[in-house]
Length: 349
Ligand code: GLV
Ligand code: MG
Image 1: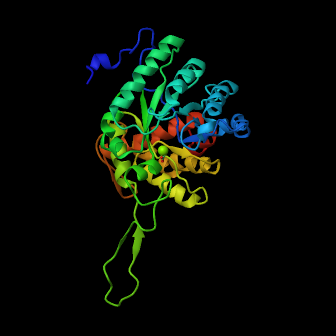
Image 2: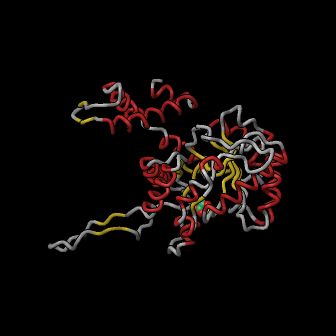
Image 3: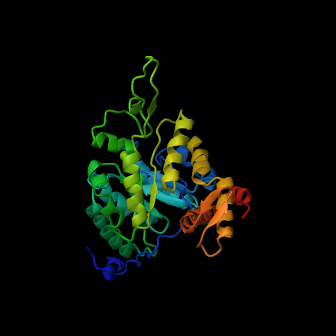
């Protein structure tokens, strides 16, 4: 492990000084765009103001013979829209570190768009060594091309080995912005017997004991992702970075998507991926705290101005710990209100 002082030193002569704290941004949805499709890319200027993050996807779902076009499309997109002026993050999901596209792709991205890209999403991260490698590579490229803002890293947690090492991944570099659950690849890596991208499964459930009268036993689906998500949230929270639910592939099931996103939100996640425009609104609704909850949280803060002691509100006991929960909720709402006028109105900020 690096010494505390060494942790925040630039890794290359001329590279920018690492962030002490990644910039605080609203990131309720990371909206995936296939940059090789000109027709989809043409819609980005229209979609960008409606989302928090636009992500150019170079990895899975982009055919091998379109990787070059996707890279060129990403560079073009980074210049066609002033994402920073819109307060919209520009992220890129790069190809795996072991893929034939990885090295040239990262070099091109930093050279041509290094001052415009906020975050590189790194797939199939297995351990801290993958982040150390990216950290050094980016520092060398940033120094070479005079990039002044360090590009952040976001890991996808989508292999069994990655899950095993998630705590070290979260703390591997000051570039770490967050981690997303990647349930599709993780299912394959674990040899789960499913064919889905996230969400539940009708076969994974608990069932009550047999009933004396032989009537139908109550049985309910369980959340396949609970353990991994919880482990990831704790690792991220402990290291001061953000956890995200990843993709929900059943575009035709917005109800289940909303439920899966809501479970993640309640457990501490900051956002999720939107793979289709219809999921943008779902993510916005779920990852913006409900206005009535925010109003109640504000009452807690007002009832205990210095955050200590005890108070009763509507029959519920409040103390220092609920004050802290309320502060999380109000701070989150305040941050969203600075970006989203509709929610600023709903919250009354
Ligand atoms: C995302 O990349 C996943 O594999 O779920
Ligand atoms: Mg994946």
